[in-house]
Length: 224
Length: 243
Image (cartoon, rainbow over all chains, first blue to last red; front, side, top):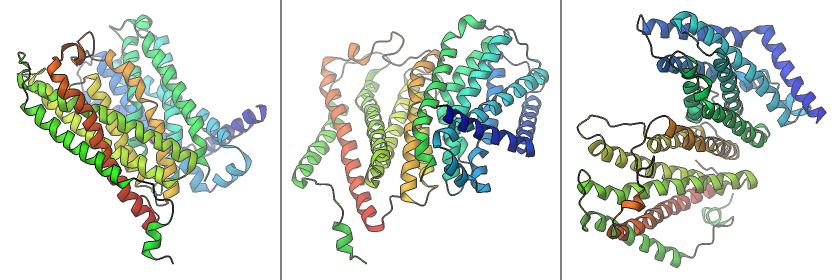
């Protein structure tokens, strides 16, 4: 067990180090989120938005950014030719856990950045910051959980093209509905914590189910 | 290099009792025809607003049951493929998904047209976020993605394995929709939110068509599915490839 944790941590550490060395994914996502939110803000103009539309716009941007950014996580191993090294030194489960942890932190950072930018640009008032933060964390966990396995699938395809959004969006509909409702209740006219118990429970359940299923299924994708 | 006949006969072809298969196929085709004729021609109770559109019950609801049956068949064969690596399992999973999609699209269209002229009469609404409608649409999107994903591989074993993983992985998220969708929009659908389910208001005379309709639509799925599987298995034995 300790060996397993050690292996997973090593994979995670490797990803962090590589990312900090090039900062390619971080910078790309930073600019993607900023430009997408600017586009949204310009398209909306001076119109006042209802909380429902505000949270919908925010999460659409987040989901697209995550689908674009996380698609790289296994493709980059293929391109650098490091898959064989990982296969030699670690087990499938360690690779999955390490990548999941990295992707979770990546999406969480993305969520926080998007939220902060959105609040500044569109002038959203946040009534229940604690609830919003919880939603962002749980949403990041579900997003990373659903996308990590599919990113491994993408790396195995011949084209490695823009297939990830097609694969992941139908699966994300329960998650999206829950986070949008929870976010709406954290904004003005929302009812705060009292109204979103079921949504938060759905988010926890969703993350639990996709991560458990990924752990079972990952070996079939990872090994030939 | 084995000859054509050798390639077509080698490798355990599924043991099919052809006589019995043809008998069941004939029964199914006669039953589907009888259900269609009965569905359109037999007397039904006339209820305001519904009027003759109630006949949609005979076709729309069985199509959903067929989609659900197809989903189960497809998932079962995907699971078995991961266990055994037998490409014939992969063929079955794909064909069940493909035929299921056809029934799903038909079910969605019959539901949409019906709702347009009953629930939303006088409005111009075609698509409404009714939970059952949304769930069906999500399931169809998943199968669309599944079929697109299959085209991204050249090697049959790898294609089968990864398609099976996606098929099962996407399926585990569908039950959440059951829970989360009804909270988004109120449903007018029979069987939801205290609306009576069809067993409560269906006149006894209609059951004589409805119950055979369930059996015969699932039977029709089975006939089309087995025919397609036979053709695909021959292809598999000839070219050694599934798609």
